Amino acid sequence: MKKILIIEDEAAIRRVFKKILNEENLDCNIEEAEDGLQGMEMIKKHDFDLVLCDIKMPKMDGVEVLEKATKLKPETPIIMISGHGDLELAVDTMRLGAFDYISKPPDLNRLLGAVRNALEKKELVTENKTLKKKINKRYDMIGESAAIKEIKLMIEKIAPTEARVLITGPNGVGKELVAHWVHQKSNRSAAPMIEVNCAAIPSELIESELFGHTKGSFTGANKDKVGKFEAAKNGTIFLDEIGDMSLAAQAKVLRVLQEKKLSRVGSDKDINVDVRVIAATNKNLKIEIEEGRFREDLYHRLAVILVKVPALKKRKEDIPLLITYFTDLICKEQGNILKKFSNEALELLQDYDWSGNIRELRNVIERLIILSEQEVSAEDVKLFAAR
Image: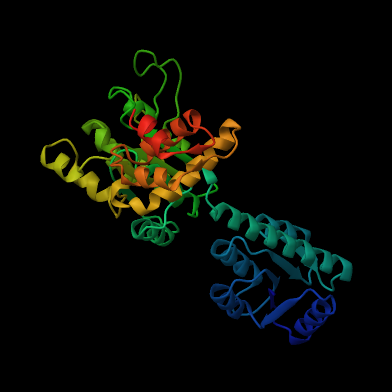
């Protein structure tokens, strides 16, 4: 049932609004506040689908309620109501984030139309928010092992926060999947997630990639370039294989984390940045710190939350689920009839060491699907899986 709040200092007017809304069978629970201060306290404590708010009230006027409420609950539509019919005031409230503005005494059709539109908007916003919380199939985290359940539970806790996350684990375990889950379940999911593979970028170019550069700042800099941190504005930057980043670049990343600002290569102008940083590495950063290859102060900035993704051999009970998932995915991608694995084939695959982890498993499954007949047998596994 939808919830509507009427903030109005005159009890008679509250009764009129409540009677009008109840007669429209909107399936709503309607609550009342007799002044702006009380209304604001109710907005803080509850999630309303719509707020009808008078402007001229004691203790806290409607404009102040509007300003505070739109910051606290930006997804809640607010219809402002005034007995003054002031066009300038109407424009001001719309600019401050009001969904609509209605003069007293209200035209019945105008009021009900605004109410219905506002409720529909809130419903669409809620649906959209729910959809964004669902993870893209491309980044499914498959598994029912205790380790995977623990990681998923941790993600649910940390995703809505602004905490930085450091993801560790061997190559091929799916550290990037964890990063995508954190981003897509966060409040930044509508903004971009920019991925940077620190190991794939030459050390002399990493600063330009991360922070951008100005025209003429070095040979080949033919025009100004926006860096990855700027491109991730209001979103997330994922620094994969951060253990391979040069010490000079580490120092600049540390500055961004400390001051939330950066300067492009070749410029001394500061640029403010608002990004959430998620990093990942397959290295033991504590050993890297001891050997002088990684900054300890940067490590402590990054590892606010530490997520350890285990090797596949430590969660072998997930292998049959992963095989089913990859088989379905690969057969659809290639337009093949869905193939099955015999029980003996599954047992053999489950006993493998999988030094390359999930990445290696996917490659082997694709090879078996291509080279096997309708059913992948234990003999097929022996012939093709070890190649």
